[in-house]
Length: 224
Ligand code: CA
Image 1 (cartoon, rainbow, N blue to C red):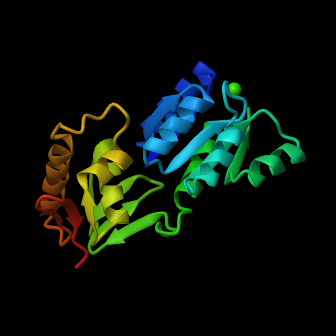
Image 2 (image 1 turned 60 degrees about the horizontal axis):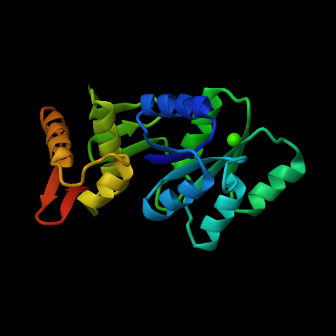
Image 3 (image 1 turned 135 degrees about the vertical axis):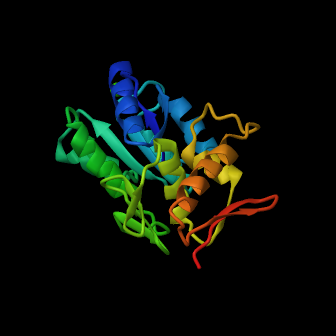
């Protein structure tokens, strides 16, 4: 899950970044609407968290512009405004959800989880299953059969992406776009290294699920 945060209050931005990273999300941060627009147009995000009042372009305006370009990414708007008219205006511009400041981080997380389940290609589930491999997205636990395997946050995020696309070939580019942030070096072998960590941990439990290498293309989590 890769999230873009557009928030000009630096303290709020770093609070969100730290919290979401701790939960295993991949997070990019920018501080004004225009840069947010450029980022959202050039990268693949699973969710945008936009502050309403931003320099250069408001979060609501940015959301409307992205929708006009046909971008279907989930959008959560943060706002100090809480009048009904304000909310309607934001929702009319294509926002999926709202959170009024101040809010608790727990509530933000619950909404992020709900929004990340929303796109049609993602099943509305809190548990992902592929053969004998099971991921509990709320408790952030992974099992092979009844046995738990312990994964780092990056390994968890990588496996979640593979599980959501089980049976499909996913390219290194797609993995980099959804699991790593803007500072990721596409020329590095980081993805292959993490795939190998994951493979080893899964194989140690004699799992039926296997991560296959598709030569020249990427990886596939076998689903049969
Ligand atoms: Ca602001």
